[in-house]
Length: 380
Image (tube, rainbow, N blue to C red; front, side, top):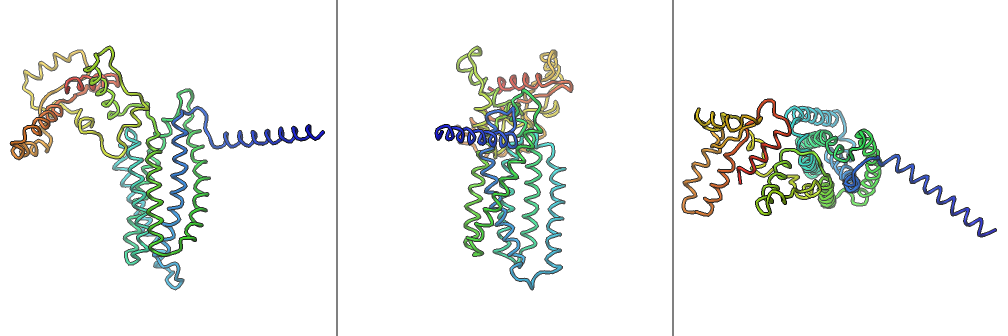
């Protein structure tokens, strides 16, 4: 009888555990996602938890800097200060959106990671209002502007990042977004509670607040780096396309066209730049241009049109007549005389830079890939 009761109890416990697990899974984890999603979310949960702690310290510093600990300083002036800094922050957010809107989609990882540093700067300025209360309005306003810019960048790049986690079997971007927001809501609540407890333990000493903020901010940036590094894009922007093509051309030169290889999306995700701008030759502005960018004679132009008559693009070789860098190069050549090895490398880079693509108005994605491959071979 005792054995039977024990087995029934274990079975009931197992069923209850499975029921809770299924409920939590259906509430917080989307279906139809790639393996990179789970690595991304693990780092994101830690990052948001730390961020919530930092937010508590930033808010506490703002209040202390404004003089909330002294009730006699409260009044209309304090309220107007907060309204003014928020209003200016919204204006900067609007200007940032109009200026940068088109740059987010093709370069979501880089802009999302950069926005983390902008948000960290905003947090730092909030803490600085407590250290230098006489500059409260200036620091608080700039801090709010930084945070508005960062939050806009984060929200503008979120769908591009989430879309990379779809396994291609279903249209579930809404499910991924909703579950992600549910996860963050829980983590933010836990982080705020932790931040409040930590702020009480630390106290209001300037040295203690600064030390804790620096430590937490460093950990958050570390987590954000791994979070963004976990994202694997299977769609090509021009930087990734050029990297794939360049690897193919280099491989073909070593082992032949038939044995040439290209990097996988996972390999590219581990090596692509997520903060610094693309390599010089991998920038669209360098690779693509117009016929007027190079100085061509009518005979040269006619010959190019004949060579590429069956294509939707033309490859042009010639120095960029529209770039100011041309005059700096001319000056630099005189300054670098006597440095033959550096001159040779510079000459090679100049020769590669002076090759560019001119696309037809009806060019497709396939034409862009073909022209980029031809450009890579030409540059070699």
